[in-house]
Image (cartoon, rainbow, N blue to C red; front, top):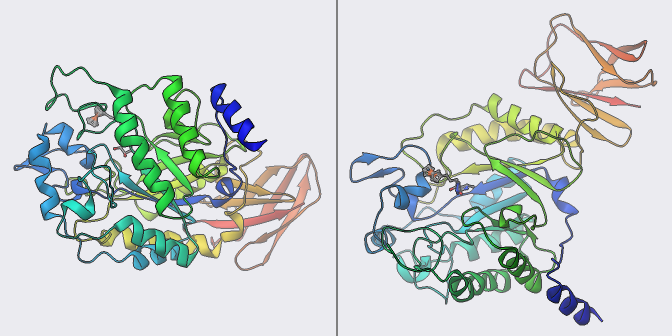
Length: 413
Ligand code: H79
């Protein structure tokens, strides 16, 4: 019966959906953009290409033969999968999404489909995805794979690269059949459970192409989520535009993505300005107060380590996240419009007030319809004086904010 239903679904162009339950509860994912582009890091032949470092091949119109030479220099001797995963875990991330193949077409794992991969083309010869998958399994971390499904500057038939293949008549389905689908199959059959496939933008795909790929993923792993950038309203969860906050609140699986340095996803020497821990906090709280997840990005360095500043700043917010975990994981968004003093998350019978701007008058009011309730500081458990004033619950706060980054008040009703 199951087989018949599956065949029927494929016939009808119906997309088989995955079970998304874990995803909206996870709240925080670590995005890792790692690839050959970490070596030039935004600088090619002495010229700076500011912004997206992982786009250097396209922006400098580097011929494939020249770009391939980067592989001979790729040797991240300091890479340690356990260290990466434990860092993510310490900082409160519940899933990791890593680039298995970005737009440059280079596979960060051992692929039998294309020799342009980390094992066959670099002196490093190790399968980073294998090592990460093993470490994630060991430490109870979910692992998802970014895979650029349409842009692949290494292939004539894929989207992009009009400098090597000028005037060439592309056969996109040939690329799908000969590289994209076989590589997805490798990723979905050789590395254990895959939490999600993070499809990215590029070619405007046909409905048939999107459906084909989503069903292809679910054929190997029915519970592997797919991101909405596959197009045509397909995909198991909605991922927003790069570096954009959610504008609406939803209970649906929904994800915002931000990079630490504002503009580049891959490691970049030109993008030195970083979001401060306070700014990262605002992005996180704003996102989860809308019910969405935050996928926060680091571009590891060519040697196989994260930038020191990212380690420092992520540890700062991670410490806060761990102390306030109850207000984050498994929470839903705010039932109210935006508040001047900060953000709200909710659980059944409780509201969590994330106060980032301590009210000068030490008063905080909440439109609770006169419902009786009690308030306390989440971390210390200390009670907060409150009274009902008409429709509102009125809290009297102490003069000094207990946690200057953000203080969480739990209101139970
Ligand atoms: O992987 C990261 C980006 O490389 C990828 N998505 C995130 C997660 C991405 N793919 N496409 N885009 C982002 C948007 C494309 C922007 C472009 Fe441009 C504007 C392409 C050409 C003009 C930026 C500016 C890149 C080159 C110039």
